[in-house]
Image (cartoon, rainbow, N blue to C red; front, side):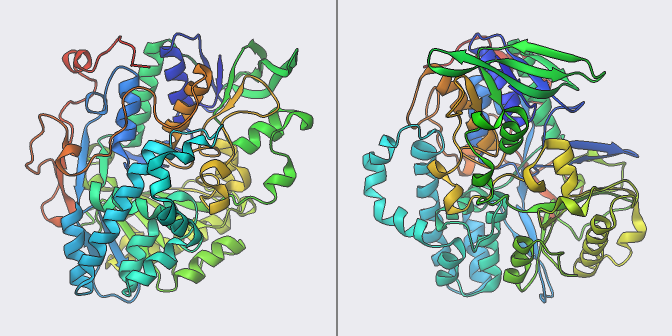
Length: 570
């Protein structure tokens, strides 16, 4: 078997298939693994250049357990409190969103008296929707729709229909009149590559993740997650080749029609190779896989279909190494403009952001001492923007395309003004930007999308591209372009859907034991102290609770306790 792409979904699929007993080769075009979960380092500063919110911990832990380990054995997780800080345009003070449901309910009551009760009901609904999604939807490749007739789904049919017929913004605005509360409940749509005005209200389940479960952080960043996945994949027997660019999916004719025979690829020296394979897993961008690696007559998704699809937003990213401390920022800080609709409309129209736009900033050095020199800060800035590759690529020390650098400069000015850091720009000593064209160059992203196909109603669940080619037997797909969708947990699930396909297992549900949603103290795992420690500074902006006590590399005892070397139940 050959896996094309060494991002989260490619590593996850390769590891699961190798652990199943298959001979697996993974081809990654870049020199490092991780795909969108990238990394960069300079001047003693380290940065994640992709995912930075550790959500759905039960899904991530489930993959590790299928590999004979656990998240607790592989990662050292920290629970953030506050989960994040929000700066609202026109508000004198930012709002800290505390970890846990009770804190969130109290926050809403402080913002708008009486709204805490409404939030409690909203979070009950979100939790129920998330539980149903885990059990009935996310782990289903929808090769058959019979799973939708399950009693748990049928009993909720009226509620689900209402959620699908309404936008997330519509649902939130009918219950919460305070714009700040609307934005706190609506912003998770951006994690789904869309807007609260276009995401179905079903995605209110996202608020269960960040407000009830809380936000975690893996020490070492998401690079540590990628490294742990790589280690387990190699130990399972995966043969990983970096600098190996797939140039074609080789097919032949079988009695039932076209069938996979292998992959053509070039190595870092430009030498041409051809590897035979009875199964090929395309874990790269779906548009790239089908339009660049398959002839037109074998494509499941013709170009006409792509013309009707939404690529989701692009992004301008900036990695900033800053001298001195920045207590004004939390680990996660969000800057929200007052006119959100204009903000999102600019993204959809493909026009440049306004001078003040919505910005996300990750200050990982608030929690992780290893990502910056002592006393300094490592900032990752993300500006959601149009998916317009024509804007060009970023660069080091302002050397990127003018459009990209202008967006980054505006974001730094806005952060400095809103957070009260007037000398921020002068304190930046390391800088690198990324633009929409970097997503095309680095991960072959269709139209420069930063995340993957947007989770609109027409691109969710069984309406999203499937995990198997309809024209080529033995060609399977994983990743953010296909079911179930965008984000690290979703990519892990897509890998499991590939495994189920190969096993001939259809219908909802994960491999092995059920994935049970975690909340409250269940998130902290076994043997961890409830005391807050490990922070680089005191105060609400940087207090944490340790989640898993094992420090990678994992101890032999921890690994043995996780069942290393064993197979999971079928």
